[in-house]
Image (cartoon, rainbow over all chains, first blue to last red; front, side):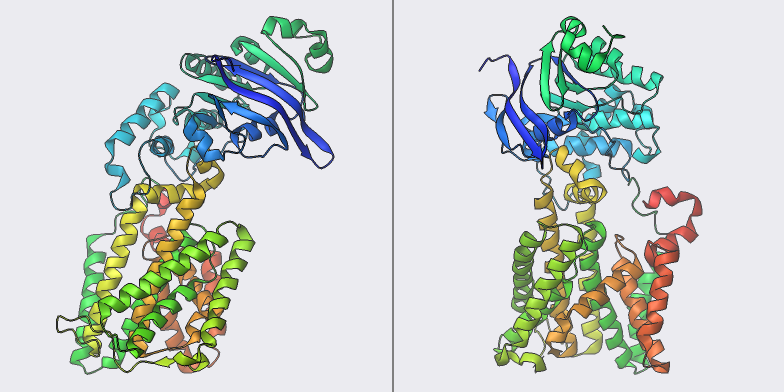
Length: 251
Length: 323
C-alpha cells in the first residue's frame, strides 16, 4: 500500500434490509489531504462515516487506516489510533463547561482514567491543554460557560473541537456547517483551513461553495455508489456528477 | 458541571455534625436506646441507598437488583458468624469481596444491554439469587438466619452496645460518602458524568464506555455489600426478604426521594422514608399508600429530589450550577 495513503476503504458494502446504503465503495484519503465526500440526501454519506468510525459494522469490505486493518476495531480503539469524528447533529457533554468538554477529550488520550482518588481539577496539564485547543477554536472567552449555553454555531465549533482535541491523524467531519448561519459557516471554514496543516480531513458537506474552497479532492456518492473522485476542477466538469447532483449552477 | 454542589454553608455543616453526634448521646442520656437503634437503621439504609445512587444517579443506569448485593453482604457475615468466624474485619472483607464478585458477573452481562432490558436483567439476576438463598436450608432457607453474636472488630468495641454500634455505622457512612465524593471528582468520575450525558459521544473521543460502567457497577455492588454486613449485625438476623425485588424498589425510592445523582441524596431519602414509615404507620396500616402520594409529589415538583429542592430554595438564580 502506498505510504502516502492514510485511510483506504476497500470494496465496502452495507445493507439495511433491501436497501444498499454502501455499494462496493472504495476510497483513499491521503496524508495531509482534505478529501470531501458529497452527494444528494440519502446517498449514504452518514452511513459511510458511521462505518469508518466504527458505529456501524460493514457487511463486507475492508477499512485500512495508517497501515492497519481496522474493519473489526471498535470506536474507542479507532479514536486511540487517531481516527476521530464529529457528528452532524451536535453531541456535546451539555452539563459540562466548554473547557471541561475539551479537557475530557484531552483526558481520553493522556494517561489512564481509572484513577479514583485524585481530583481531576487539580490536573493543571489537562486544563492548559484544553485551553490551548479552545484558543485554536476561538472559544477561549466561553471556556467557563456551559456547553448548552453556546450559540448553535459555537456548539458546532465545539463539536469539531471535541474530535480535534483527541489529536487525530484523520478527522471525519460530518457536515460541520450543518445549521450554521453565514457568519458562523465562514468561521468554521476558516478553522478547517487552519487545521489542514496538521491533520488529514474527510469532509462531508452540503455547502458546495465551502467544499470547492476547501477540498483537495472530491468524491461523489450517489445511491451508495461512488460515481467519481478527482480534483474540484475535474468534478465540477464531470458530466455524470452534474447530471446526478451538482446541476448546472456549479458547473 | 463546574460546581456540582454550591458550597454548603458552615452552619448547615455544624448543625449536621451536632445532630449526628449529639442526638444519640441525648437519647442515651434519656434512656431511649431504642431510638438510637432506629437511627442506626436509617444510616445503614442511607449507605445502601448512596451505593445504589452511584449507578442509578451518577451512572444513569436503572439497576433494579441492588438489594441482591446488600443481601449477599449480609449473608456472608451471617454465614461466617454461624460457622464461628466472628472476626469483623474478615467478615466485612468477605461480604464486600463476594458482593464485588457478584456485581462483576452480573454487571458484565447486564451492561451489554440498555434501557428497559438493563432494568429487567438486573431484576432477573437479583431474583435468581433470592430464590437460590431461599433454597439453602443449611442457613435457614426461607426462614432466614439468626446470628447469636455480632462481628468483633477488636479495640474493645462492643457492637452489642447500641451507642457504640451507632458510632461505628456513622463512621462507615462518613467514609463511604468521602469515598464516593472523591471518586466522583476524580478522572474516573468525570468519565462517568460524561457517559451519563452521552455515552456514544464518550466512545467517540476514545473512552471504552462499557469498562467504566462495569467498574462503577462493581464499586456500587461492593458498597451495597458493606451496608448488608452492617444490616445483619443490626438485626441479628438476615432473611431472603432482604434480597427481594421490593427491597430494591425501596432503595430506588430512597434515591429518587433524596436526590438522584447527589452525594447525600441516598442518605436523605433513607432518613425521610424510614421516618415517614414510622410516623404514618402509627396511624394506619396502609402507610405505603401515603408514601406513594409523597413520592409522586416529589417526582412532579422536585425532580432532583429533596437535595435539589434545598438547593433551589437556597439559590434560585443559580440553577445552572446544580446541573
